[in-house]
Length: 302
Image (cartoon, rainbow, N blue to C red; front, side, top):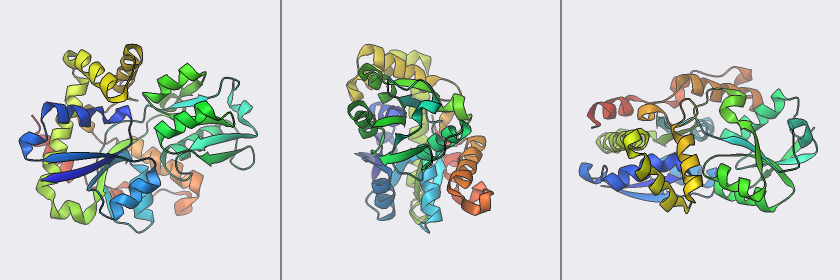
C-alpha cells in the first residue's frame, strides 16, 4: 500500500529516514512516498484536500485544523521541538528586539506562538514592541534570517540551528529552557482516513516507532550521524551536533515517539493565551487526539 507522508525538511524526521533505510515500512507491505512542504499553510491544506495521507509537523497545526472545522486527529508524538531562539549577531537580549521583526512560518500556530510567548515573558508584545514577518518553514526561515538583516529573530531547530551560526546568528536559549515541556512534532491524519485505514496506519506507526528506537540506540550513533550528513549535506561537526540535540532527554526525540500530555497541555495553554481562544481556558486534550492506533502499533513494534 502506498502512503504519502508530508514533512518539513528537518532533522526531527530522522526516525522516518531510518525506518525507510532499515526496510521497516517495506516489511509491513507499505511503500512510503516522502513529500517536503515549504510551510505549514500548504501542509494543512494538503492534508485536508487528500494530497497525502500522513503529516509530521508541530501538532499545534492539527489543533488549528480542528478549530477551523477540519476533522484532523493527532495519532502519535515525536519530539519536543529542539528549537533555539535564534537572533542576529547584534542582538544581545530580548529587549534588543524592540522595533524588530520576528521571522515565523505561520503567525498563529506552533513555534510562532511559542516565540510570542517567550517574548511576552520578557515583557514584549506583538505590534507594540515588535512585528512578525512570514518566512516559511525552518529551512527557508533560517536562510531568510541569514540573508535579510531586518529579520532579527526566529525559532530554528536542527540542523539549521547549527548551520545559521556559520552566518553569525546566535541563540538566546532553547525553547525547552525558556518555556519548558512542549509537544512539538507528531503525526496527524484526517480522522475519517484513519478509521478507514486502521491497519495501514498501525503498521506505519509500528515501523516509525522502530525507526525512533534505531535513532536513539547508542549502538547506531555512527550510522545515524552519517545518515544525517547524507540527508542534509552536513559537515561531520554539524551532523554530530544535530544528533546530540536529537537524543537529548526532554527536548529531543521522545522514547518510542510517545505523546507528551504535559507538553500538549502547554501547547493548548499557549494557544489560549496568545490567540485569546476558548475564553483563555484550554479545552480537553482528547478533542484533538486518538492515540489508540499508536497504542496498538506499539505492541507490534519489534
